[in-house]
Length: 158
Image (cartoon, rainbow, N blue to C red; front, side):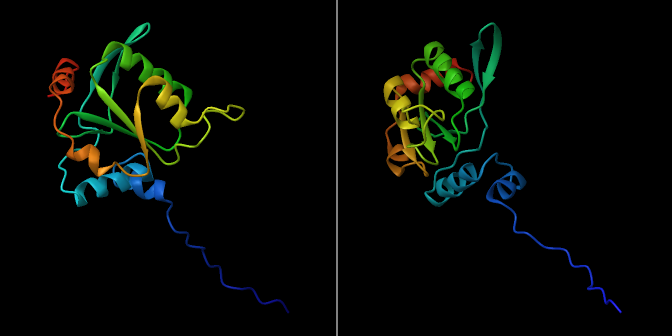
């Protein structure tokens, strides 16, 4: 005679992305940086602002992850896809005074499978500052740049 085991459901721990999504972020890296900013006493809102730009051939909007009080725009990226790279080059062309910086999960990641170019190399080539994992406290402590603050107003961010 066969005895059957009672059915038990396996409980899995939510991934960092699932937890981040639940808390209103798109990635675990964004959630980690939200907590980091809070711990450092920097008051900013996630994706609070919109930057208008022309995405040929249409009008488009860019929603930065973070705009620090000193005017630095921070974008956190786990994966830095072709569309993101293209978008940021267009924004830089149309809003050259904006100080857009990146925080990557891993800046040494290649931009594509067969490429020798890393995220870090791409940023250096195109004049973007970047860092790894967390928004550097030095960025938070930088003095406000009047040109960046004016560019934010021009781009539709108060």
